[in-house]
Image 1 (cartoon, rainbow, N blue to C red):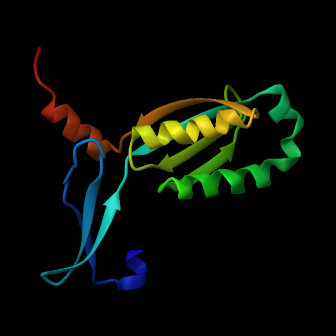
Image 2 (image 1 turned 120 degrees about the horizontal axis):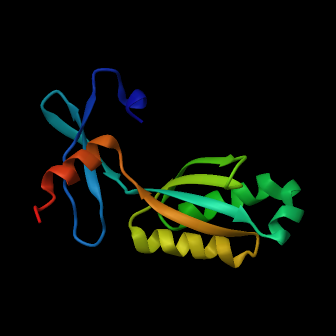
Image 3 (image 1 turned 45 degrees about the vertical axis):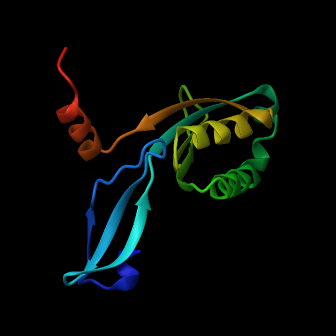
Length: 139
């Protein structure tokens, strides 16, 4: 997005957080003036294991990816990556969603297809996690 505006623009993370929405904002600056505000949403990693039905329909993987991306966008999120993997999980999806409740709706939509079971975790950038660690109370 910043490339579209120009190389002389820098973005800063304001760290503004709204209760219950888990949103923060990035302000794009041109000189000393704010010109654009972009919401920064929490990141989630969703690990999928195909059911027998899902494994039988692997030829439809591109169609399922497109449907999944449409659901993420409909829920106000953004699909960052999706990979078919080898090992413990069949698919790993990384998404930004407005909040945990919205992510739960997405995971339920995936499960409702009967093609996969999900395990979802909240992901933090090293900077986000460092800030949380610094603010953690002592016991």
